Length: 306
Image (cartoon, rainbow, N blue to C red):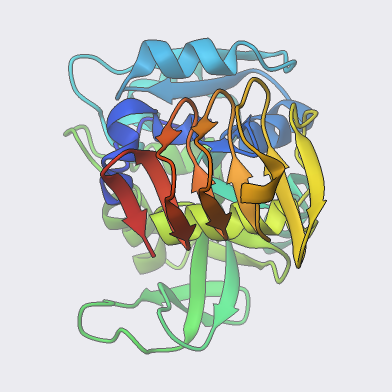
């Protein structure tokens, strides 16, 4: 199950136009990483959709991955737990869930191996953190949750948005909607001592904010993030001080590109502009003389300065 129905409110106004799961990372849809991981691990894969669902499905259908199908939540999103409850009659003995806004090198087969060893009803992928923890661990078991509002700097484990559930665990899902996994199913499993943890210390980014969107894009440009599961359609250029990316059908003078400049498909950068550590989103126009640094640029006057 690829959870892809999120509204992406922290990324507005960008996600008012582009569904969050298909935000372009060097012109590759964000959800491609999760969809590739799931379809490689097995099938069938279900991708839930809600906000801008037709657009999201259209983009994902262009990817060369087989064995998946969309599930459109209408008229409103069901929440992660609500989606699993709605589809529980289709589940086999085990289901893997994966948040579509995650870029990670986590191997699903390693998560499954940990799950089998633990013999738990469910296993969540986590990483160790010194603050902003979601969970407390005792060995390979999750023994409690951290309220970040009260304890924002508590160390422990952070949930990575990837999990595996035995079918029996799905019987604990609530029948009200919308419902999230954390406050319903995961909380119940922790109370019963049935939630295990798989520790992953590799690459992981939750692309939930403009800063994270820019950060993972720069990581991809410099080869620090997991390699995209499909070919990047544009060109990486050597520029003074580093690298830049130019997507297909763009209009931009190379002299405008500084290190970390990312000009996505169809964008237009007018003369005498300079771009450094910034994303120009697809089809956007950068006026002449603009100086973009640490910015996600949508259109004239619409930008996230970071």
